[in-house]
Amino acid sequence: MHGRRCRLPADPHDTPIKTLSSKEWNEEIKKCLDDIHLATVKNIQKVQNQMKARFDRHRRDQEYQVGDLMVVKNEHPENKLSPKYIGPYEIIRRLGHKTYEVRFNQHGPIHRLTVDKMQALN
Image (tube, rainbow, N blue to C red):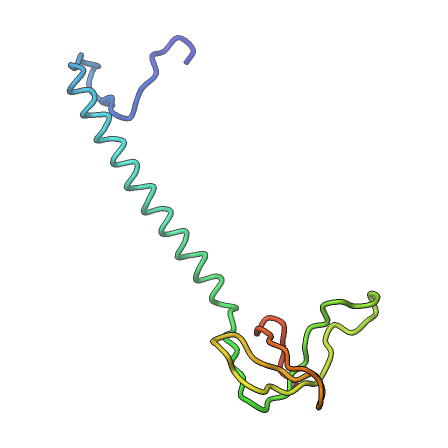
């Protein structure tokens, strides 16, 4: 840059530039690239752990019991003043870690819903 020879990570910093054979130079470059790769992997792992910790700080693992009353998110509101949640509805059965069967009315069909579409009625 600006008349200077570009320095590579494998170039020595405090000693004058010496001529290396192509095999030695390739080994130096490979060693430097391996070091850079290890540092990059460590930094990525560190950032992933920080992001996971930040996400888990506000995470709620909701578990409901059979018979609990829930309100269900209104997926198709008629207008912007329609209620966000409709209900209350009763949990009939737990199907999985996040999936429940909910009966919308006394004689109506049973629907399968996940936790993200339900909220406890307090």
